[in-house]
Image 1 (tube, rainbow, N blue to C red):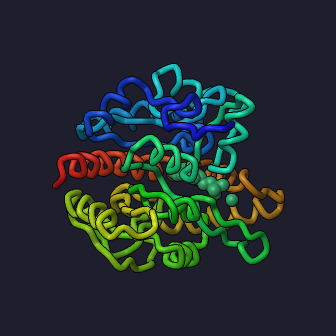
Image 2 (cartoon, helix red, strand yellow):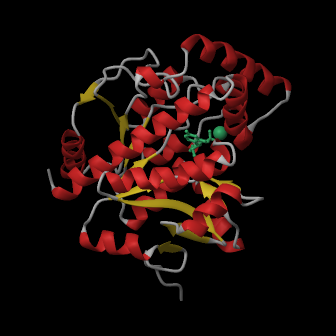
Length: 312
Ligand code: PSU
Ligand code: MN
């Protein structure tokens, strides 16, 4: 007879530090690994992986970078694990749906927002920092390409701190999908939805939070209301002083989309292709804006995790 597996089974392994923090109710911030393996160029990506963990620590929380190594979902990586994610060859990009196959076949891969949200929530982590979410792609009517991130966030009780959704996407359509799916979205100290590399996407956002404590209160209200297990998106813009020049952004993005079309890049490959094109096409400026956004998100996620664990 089959028995129900417990969260401590061999498919999910928190690091000692993360397990201890969770047991004590101490603040923990999940970090995703696809941004490291597929979203940023080497060798900078390893430095960033280490730096993001450091930023979370400086905010007073324990970082838990999540990835699947040899079939085991690791919740918190040591430095060898981070190095594997940053430099390992043949590392897969794992969305939520890929997790069972990776576990069964002993595969290794970095986790996207959908897989990371799921694994973090299952491990008992409530706050998660990333760069920009996936969403509805611009060619949606032809390709039906909508990131699995959106669906997972509509059924996972997690707070994701992000700089909006990637600007390579159809941003208004993505915001519409989030509304339809019942995902709460709030701007952090802004009434405009951030534009990932840009401070603003130009789209309005209905709710504005001013402090990490307010975010923690929204999280508590989600639990008290007891509705479907949806996420809270805290949209935290990159400071204007660190954003990509908007004209350069628009020009190179148009080139990138045309190149993807010409080269018929589709599916999981499209997001890394477009991000890589932008890095080269802007002479590295998009990378700096991306990093500024992610750094800010890690710091804010740390502060929200702290407020959450204090019960503020
Ligand atoms: N944020 C970044 N860079 C990235 C990503 C997010 O700054 O590379 C990754 C995330 O892992 C996100 C994924 O879940 O891109 C979306 O991929 P897709 O569009 O194939 O769902
Ligand atoms: Mn996709």
